[in-house]
Length: 517
Image 1: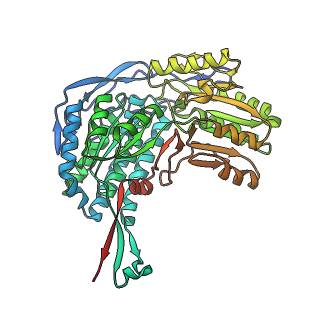
Image 2: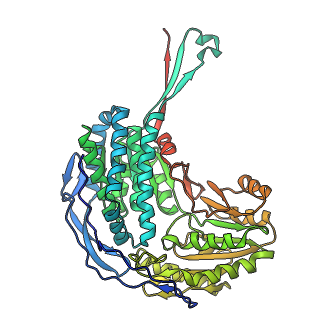
Image 3: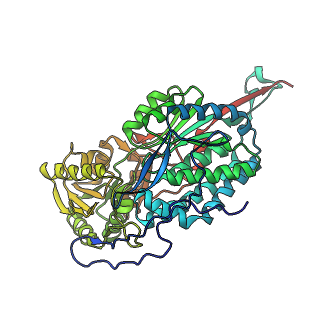
């Protein structure tokens, strides 16, 4: 198959200069780039529903969060198109389930290769529609490629095993085995912060399992996912498989509700807020749901922690993607004897964080997805201050961005501590001992990832036992995620696990076979 045409959204083909960190105590402001957006119109018009592309009822603007300007339009679907997509998926379900494993693996590896071929233009597109710093968008593309490769590798591992039926006399002379079969039509709903990677974690495992899938991207960030689906459908067609095995419908909550409540859907995989996840779980019942929801990830610093490593981790893990990551460091819990020194070391690193235009190579914090998100984050900072928290650094705007912020001693009951802030804000609190630290991590309603910095194996292994979270990371940021590892949370952080191997298990069902020769 020839290399795909570069996607829409190439804002600037030339390298951006790398501004030097500002030694002043305020955050460094990256230069502004005003290169016009270039749209090669490579995608077919409309939405990929059925085996072709169908007209959308309307179009909507796609806005560059950094300057608030509309740089493209995107097709917007409705509930009728959503139902039409499910009906088509039901119609091709048997054909997709019967695709040979070699065909599924060929398609998955082909998509990975195509993404590598267009990595630069896709990176540019992600910068434009998400507003994330370029370095985070580059990481997103690389992780998406790895996810498709890992899903291809897992195709060969979808199998079962024999069962010793003769453990009871009634099973004498009988033969039993179980296999894993595709669950059926899958709906994947992705968040705005990592649209291509999150969509890849929905689509690739579904295809590996033999399930048709309909993906709904976040309304603010549809373009990269549209392009991804276009690549997948081209690969499916080239392999002689139905293009309609993968469909995409954009739109609002009515589109999501039409998808998640349709009786033809067998499973829903959702990444987003806890509130929306709870509603989807209720609406989708009794369908299977995989929910990757919110978090306010904690980093615990023990008395014996390497404080420079811990401070570096807070800065690296608290402010990447402008804080718009569910496993970004939001809470730092430090033992009393080292808390003051850790706070000092974190604060002295903050002026080196470059804030501004996400197209610049050195930018680490840019504008949040929209003005409403920015206003909410700043209001939560103000609430914390009014409740007695200290603003150690930041807490203000830098242009359209929120300055990297460090709060100290935010009390319980404040959303900057209790909820998911989804912005460049870290809150530090002091505890007397490790047990109190672990109890404080567990006291919240979320449980996705947590990190512990310690030199002691006893503290590390105690954390593995004591922390009520989906992943425990020792001496690294809680935001560390390998795309081949099981990923998910407990409590309000979700249900089920992602990562190709584990998502495939979620999207298949066990079928028992009993044979009397």
